[in-house]
Image (tube, rainbow, N blue to C red):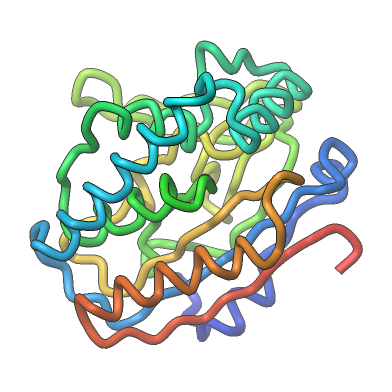
Length: 239
């Protein structure tokens, strides 16, 4: 960050604009900063976690269609509410659960861990490098002038969100389009990440207790990989 702040100070500055809560009054954002990470390749611990996530996805989909799973269905409804087509731009939870039914990618210990927990707890997760943030995280309805740095065919491509689209931003522009669809390159996790920012997006089908349980699971699994310090903040309407 251009002006270093502590994790607690950063979390206090993050916000969700009222126009987002007007769209979904039941929305909650859980922001989590994990410090002390020691990046590594996938491990036997993360392999077990990924297998558990794959088995959980198959269990869920044995008795329900993917688009009918409660939280995925709620996100599909929400995407339509701000003009996105959920069958073309799937929220991250839907995309990940779809892959988990077959096999999740093995990326590295950090990514494997939060992908698995997202599937196991059925909550969309975003993971970013805290050190690459400039200004606090803000969730807002886009004007269409904001900048998003995507990657197409291996090259950086600057895009603009649609007017009214819900996006996560910081002072440098959009960090994630369509609420939890696609994260930008600029703040992405890498092998150099030592402090990560995770954002969990929750709608009505998920309770506050379930959100906290998912964060507890994330903290537990990451603490098995290295000695970490975790800070969290739940943002909700009227709070």
